[in-house]
Amino acid sequence: MVSVPAPEQAATHTVTNQPPPLTPYDASDDPVLMEGLRREGAGWAEEDIRRLGLRAGSAEAQEWADQANRHEPVLRTHDRYGNRVDEVDFHPSWHHLMRTAVAEGLAGTPWSEDRPGAHVARTAGGLVWGHTDAGHGCPTSMTYAAIPALRKEPELAKVYEPLLTGREYEPELRVPAEKRGLLAGMGMTEKQGGSDVRTNTTTATPTAESGVYTLRGHKWFTSAPMCDVFLVLAQAPGGLSCFLVPRVLPDGSRNTFRIQRLKDKLGNRSNASSEPEFDGTVAWLVGPEGQGVKTIIEMVNCTRLDCVMMSATLMRRTLVEAGHHARHRSAFGARLVDQPLMRNVLADLALESEAATALTLRLAGAADRAVRGDTGEQAFRRVATAVGKYWVTKRGPAFTAEALECLGGNGYVEDSGMPRHYGEEAPLLSIWEGSGNVNALDVLRALRRAPETAQALFGELALAQGADARLDAAVARLKDLLATTSEAGARRLVEHMALTLQASLLVRHAPSAVADAFCATRLGGDWGHAFGTLPDAADVDAVLDRALPGRN
Image (cartoon, rainbow, N blue to C red; front, side, top):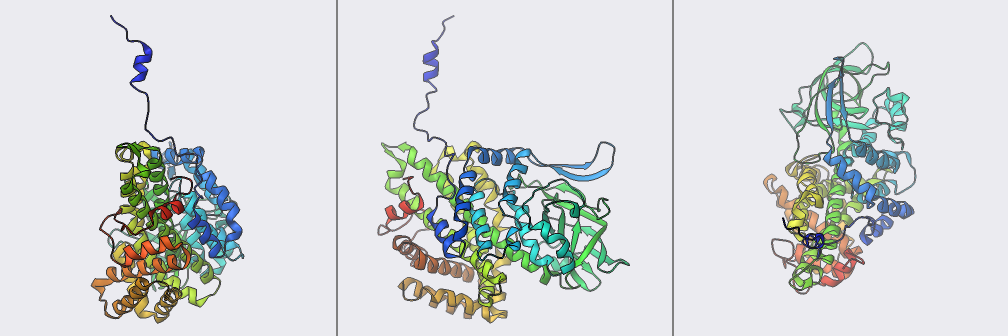
C-alpha cells in the first residue's frame, strides 16, 4: 500500500481567492443612516447607535442569529402530566437577541421618553440591530405598536404601559403585574378573511364585570405566541371591537389560549407564528365597542413603519455582504470590485439602499413629530407610511436576489447567510401588515377621503422644487395621476409616489452623484429592467465611495 504524503493531501485543500469572514464589522458604518439620524432630530443617540452597530456585527451576535434560525421554536401543547400549557420553547440564542433588543429600547421604550427624536432613535437602532436576525423583530415591533392602541383605555394603559415600555426582558409566562417587563402581540386575521378583518367570526360576550368579555374563535396568524398580552379583534354586540388578552390572568391562572399549531413558513423561522383558539378566553375591551379597526389602526401604522425599516435593513446588510465579497474575490484577472460591470451593479444597489434608508428615517421623523401633536406630520405620516410600506418592501426581494448573485454560487449556500436574507425574510415584509394591494388601496382611500394627506405629501415634495427638472416633471405627473387614477391603477400611482418621494429626499440631502443617478434612472427612464443598468454618465465611483466606505 502506497501512502500519500500529508503535505500533498493538504495542498489539494489550500483555500485561495475566497473572501475572509465579514464578521466582525460595524453595522452602523453608513453615512446615510447617521445623516438621517441627525436630520430627523435624534443626533443625541449617535453614540448608542454606533455602539449597537458594533455589537450587531460582532461574531457573538451573528452566531446568535445563525443559531436562532437553525434551532427553530418548538410547540409544547401539554406538560408531562397531561396539563395543557401551550408554550413555545426557543433556543437560548433567541433569548440573547431579544434581551439585547429590549434592553436597547427597540420595543416600547420610546413611548416613555419625552425627548424629541426618541422614535427616530429606535428606528435607527433597528436599522443596525436588524443586521442580526429579522425574526425577533416581530415581538419587539408589536410591543412598540401596542402602546398607542392601549392608550384608548387609560385604566389598562396605567397598568400595562410602564411594563411594555421598560427595558427588561422576562420570557417566562407569569402574572403580568408581577413582571418587570412585558411583550405584546396581536391577533387580527382569521382563515376566512385574512386582511378583510371585518369578516372576523370570533365572538366577544360581555360578562357581569364592566369592560370584561369572554372570547370564542380561532385566529389564523398570531406571531410570537409567548408574548404576555395580545390585542385581538372580535365581534362584540356593538360590532368589531378591540380587546386585550393576557396569557396569564391576574389570579395566576392560565387564560385559554390553545395553540393549535405553529406555521410551517417559508422564512422568518426563528420566530413562532401560531394559530390560537379562544374558548371562554377572558379579555378586556380597548376603546369603544364597534370601533376595533379605528382603535387598532395606530398599531398598524407603527408596524408598517417597522416593515419599511426591516426591508431597508436587509438591503443594507446584503449590500455590505456583496461589497465585501467583491472586494476580496478575483475573476478573469481582476478583483470583482474593480470590474466595471460589477461596479455598476453595486452602485445601482447602493442607490436603492440609500433611498430606502432615507425614506425610513423620514417616516420615523414624521412618526416622532406626529405623536407630539404636529398635525401636518400626522397627515404626511398617514399616507407616506403606507407608500413606503408598499414600495420598499416590494423592492426587497429583487434587491436581495441581486446581492446574492454578486456572490455567485457562494451566495446560494446556506452558510453564507444570503439564502436566509433572500428566501426567508425579504418576501415576508411585503405581506405582513397588508400585502401590496391592501397598502395601495389604503393610500388611495387616504388621499381621497382626507385631502390634508395629499396637501402634506405635495408640501413635502415642494421642498425640492426647482432642484432637478426630472423631479419637477415627476411631481407634475403625480398630480395628474392622482386626479385620474382608478382603483385598478392604485399600484401604478403608489409606485410613482414612492419614487418621487425618495427622489425628493435624495435631491435635498444626498450628494449630487447619488441624487443625479437616482433621478436619471428611477424618474428619467435612463435605466434598464434589472439592477446594474446605470447609464455611463452615472458617477459610480462617488456612489460606491459613499455606500461602502473603506470597502472598495
